[in-house]
Image (cartoon, rainbow, N blue to C red; front, side, top):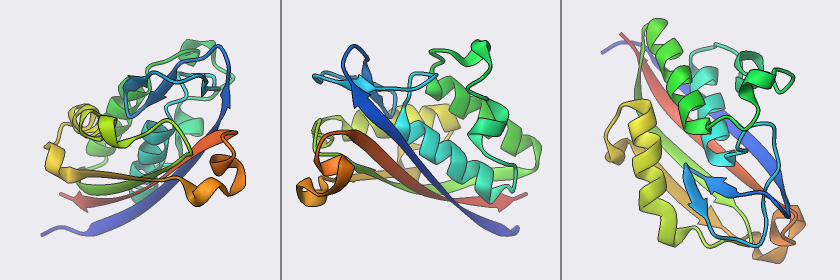
Length: 160
């Protein structure tokens, strides 16, 4: 077995009117959507940062700056695929991830398996390698008040 590396990622996006609510590559019907330069997929961004962190390869802002018009409205699953390609180029393989989404709404459970499938496909791994859970924060904080959505991810990479 090669060397194992753990990475942690965190992302947050504000909920606003007039935007789509894309989480884990799933376009979820909701009164508000996530604000960002790309599609603002908070879960894909957190996982990308966890992967890059484990590989000691920076963060998604370094790879895909929000000042670059090429990434305006970009599909975050495409960006996640590119992150994984770069990390594989550094000699790492994806082993596992555990992700948490914090929001009062929308409900995550009905979309969890689709999110897992989307993220796994973007990473080129089986669905069993991607875990997702959610919390409402009991109406506390900015997530609980419906101002935004946050996501955390930890991942394990193995050096080949």
